[in-house]
Image 1 (cartoon, rainbow, N blue to C red):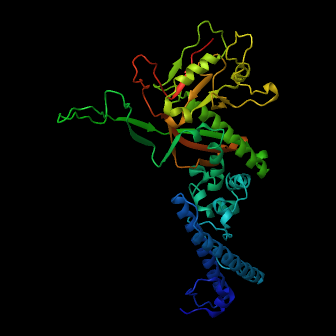
Image 2 (image 1 turned 90 degrees about the vertical axis):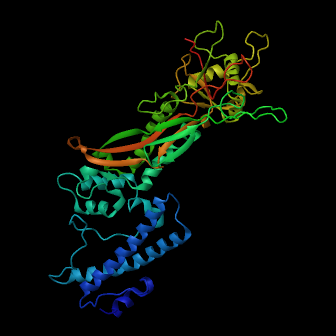
Image 3 (image 1 turned 45 degrees about the vertical axis):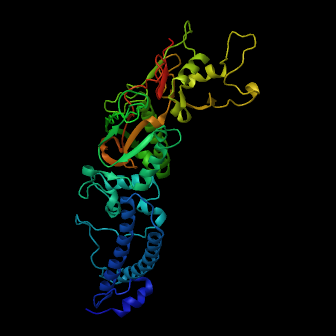
Length: 466
């Protein structure tokens, strides 16, 4: 073995120092060496990205610089490979040697350079292009080039033997795009006390004793030289198990024929459906196969309606009663959850409806010409489709979402694509799975220190007015 001077001169400074080539007696051998170097560069880039993803962090400046250097080197090597392949292919009766194979014995396409910005896409421009590639790789006569492209993107392939067994996993960048929208402004999830876990369940100790209560840690006034009274903490336990929120989206082959169209459709539709379902569970979930909702837990406070209050109304006294039952420390973090049908009630609400000069509650001083404040007693209002219709229990609630814990498995949505589920309908299925759990932190309401005072809490709703 000796250094191949000619190959080093061709590659210049792009190859790492100390690289040794086999003594090549033919252009085919040199070409294979160049391909090996190209594979090594891509493997190095993929290892850097995989390390950052495994540690759930951004790429460091040094890693980004290394990836960029690998890209430049790969481009130069790629040009060398292409020139030599063209020259070898032009020779009569000659081919450029065996193409690299994957573990299943199939020919593997020569990898292309991975730009840092596209590292999580594995060469796919959008979700539609990825879907088309999955479609081409499946079926009775799979396209070998499409199959090779999916298998080169190592982390996107569930089973190298059969796409139907493990399915094709959507590249990480597209999964995160959906996750960002799930965690978006319109979602209750971002307002809760969020945690992540790598397991399917989590157990958390809690202390529900109050400073003025008779259990838990206590303080006592003692006389001089008197014996000190002991106390000890009283802990409860919150055990929470993750549930699966699943969206199965069949897409016709006609829609798949337009990559950008399906990309935009799925990015819009999947988050809409999953956010709506998740919001409903976070408010009203039964806790069986889904989160236990804010208004379904044992610490819920239901405020009684006013005497002789008409059906399907919300009075100012209802608002005052609900506000007064929120624990003092939670008021600054609380918000109103309402069904949109409540808005006319707010816009026409009066401090005293029987007064000869009724004063509006919700409207600004400029009247209807000005925009409503968007707050009620200083706290923001969030209309949610999940809330019940006007007059029903749960049409309006006053809650502190920080006193509701949610646990998600990682940050990404597990996403799969399969052409086999609806193969006889010419339909490809996209499956999105989000593992999440949620429940109120507390299992009891707060009993105030003053005897006879109404209980307090973090989740308050209004009695039905049907």
